[in-house]
Amino acid sequence: NVLKHDEDHFEIEIAVAGFDREDVTIEVDQNQLVIKGQRLKEDDVSKYLHRGLAARDFERAFTLADYMEVGDAELTNGILRVKLTRIVPEALKPRLIAIK
Image (cartoon, rainbow, N blue to C red; front, side, top):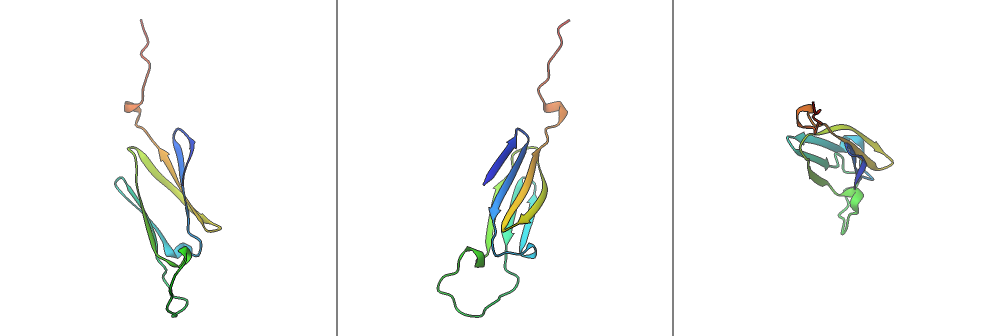
């Protein structure tokens, strides 16, 4: 889910139940945000017929719009939240010209 707080502040929410902080990596490369979940330890050596979401590795990639900056990330109660802020340079912002 992508939440919009206002015109310049957004938040990506991903359910990562079953993953610890050390199991999840967040990488930003130019305009790509990649979130990966990889289980670092195998709790049980049994052979599974089906594994739920909490036991499977995942990778999600997001293409960021121009001037998006990735901020803090927080993992609480199985929900990963990554904050995004749009920072448009002053030279590209609309401006009013005073009439003389």
